[in-house]
Image 1 (spheres, one colour):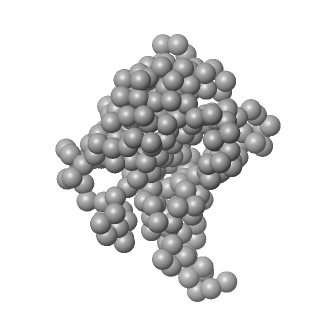
Image 2 (cartoon, helix red, strand yellow; image 1 turned 45 degrees about the vertical axis):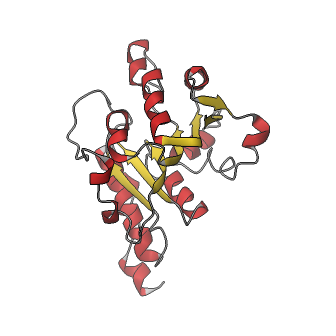
Image 3 (cartoon, one colour; image 1 turned 180 degrees about the vertical axis):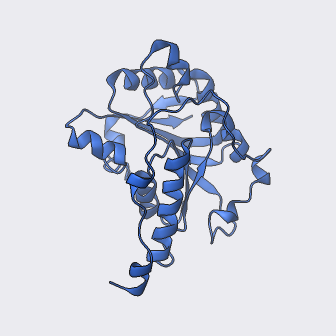
Length: 234
C-alpha cells in the first residue's frame, strides 16, 4: 500500500445514511446562482479551462454511476445533483478521495447539493447539456405525490431548454408503473422522441446504466426487474 493510500481512505456509506425519500416541493436551504454565468464552476473542476458541464446526473445518489460516467468520458465534465444532505456530502468526499488516490483523474466529475426540480435553469444555459440521467428516481407511489415525480410535463420543458438538439435523456427504474409514466410523458412531449432498441444497444452507456449505481446493484442483489428507455431531444 502506497503512502497516499495509507493517508487517504474512501468514505464509508454507513456514516452517511439518510432516509431514501425527500420532499422536493418543500423549502430547503440551497445556494444557487441567479444566472448560469454567475456560477464559478472552477471551484468544482480544478482543470476546467474553457470547458463547460455537458452531462448531468439528476438525483445521483451515492455517485456510483457518476464515477463510471467520469471514467467513460474522461474529456467531458459531469455533475451530480443530489437533494439529500448526507448523500451529497458522501459523493463530494468520495470524489475528493478518488482525486487524492489517483492523481490527475476524476477531476471531470463533481457533485452539488441542490433541487434540480427548481433550479436547473439557474445552473445551465440554453442547450448547454448533451446528456441528462434519471436513474432509479423516487417513484412517489401515492397518486397525491405524483406531482413530485422528477419527470412531468412542466419539467420536461425545462429539460428541453437545457438540452441541446440531439441531446439525450436516459431513464432507468425498477418500478414498472414509473417506467410507463416516464415513457408516456416524455413521448407525449413535442421536444422528444424515443430511441429504438437497436440504437440503444449501440450506445456506449447502455451496458453501464443498469448496474453502475448503488441502487442498480441493490436491485440486482434482490433479483428485481429493471426498465430502461432513452429519448432524443428534437
